[in-house]
Image (cartoon, each protein chain N blue to C red):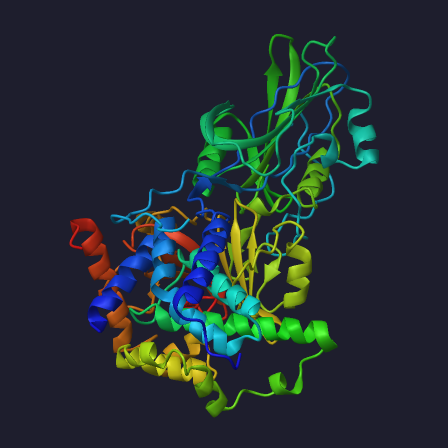
Length: 181
Length: 409
């Protein structure tokens, strides 16, 4: 997999989403939904819940696209984290309906091994990501950090990686301006 | 689930169904309207005749509002179709100045002249005198576009919210005329110069500045008084009267504007917070107070530490930690200097000579997505620029002068 090309595509896609291009949402769905469905399959308790997680994740992407600032150029880690967050909310809601309180297994952080197990059906996609994005996935999806926390832990918010973001933005702007893509 | 995820046709059917649902519900998203400042100005008052001695005229201030303008056309790349489906100066006890940071959360800006006053004040001030209101049926949320209008010193540009004339149609020039609006600090300053040149006496008062002057009503040889008031938040009120006692009218009008009749469009971004939302306040209280006037719309944002509030005209993101508000991003509101979404960096620098760059998440040698901050009290107010670094897209105030990288991840 050409990860550089993929992440370039992610940047362009994110830009189109930010501009309100609904076709970009369809493209994003085609590109990431299979992976998110497999991940959600490991998170949810029913097929209906899986569908709800995947749909909510893409709706979050759509609604937040105009303010979204990725720490790297890859969109998949952000989507996976959002999907994980929706799953947490879904679990809380289900638990609330069932007993009006969190079940014991949700009251404590999920064990690393269990979290790794939930990634079993998306391992290939994560392994295909650039190293920094793989680390983000690990910090968020296994160690339980938020996307923003992971970015900060990796120095993405202040260090050299931020320059990556800036360069990506500059390149994207240039691409849009000069129709390089 | 412990079963294997679907593959093949089973997966495809599932994807098609989900895609249709996503695209259908995605239609609910509305691109944030790009707003530019619109200021409310109060028009001069013309009063006419009826009665007897001239009374004191009071003025009120008008809140400043934002006005929605067309959203910028998004930059797009080739897209692929979805494959799936005054006479006497105002003399009365000082009224509280409407404060963006202390006022109770209002539901809307004033839309009814009668509603500005209590029943007792209305009876005392206007009695049975007929009211003519303009506009007759404002919607209370969309601020009129700024326009050039005459006043004693010439013309100025402001948005006029509400124009109220209490006058007996059988009278010549007697009556009371109250106008409410908002304007930029520069426009108000220029107007003060014009009022002074026209013979008005101006002095601090009622939480702002009060100018009063006498005028000769035309055509009747009656003397009238015009009182103008405005505050540092750009709110202004003009009250004119001829032969109509108006003792306490100004303070009553100010009180009316600072009540729940003032809409969230008048909220101002400051170092303290945004409107009634102050940094450090209890998040649950904010939700309870703001929600009724700016609906909470977290939608699919899964972050429980963020509250998204959207009324169409304005958008707020409230970030909390441990139950306390630690930051607020406002889109559609401005600072007291009138700076907010749509303003240029040059305008920011003109308004804030001490503007400084706050380190962001990118290459700070690039103007893209830059953060520009100005100190206001104990905190900084930060302006978030667009990708070109030329236009403000939002205003942030928080414990940290740098806005979060993103809110929902």
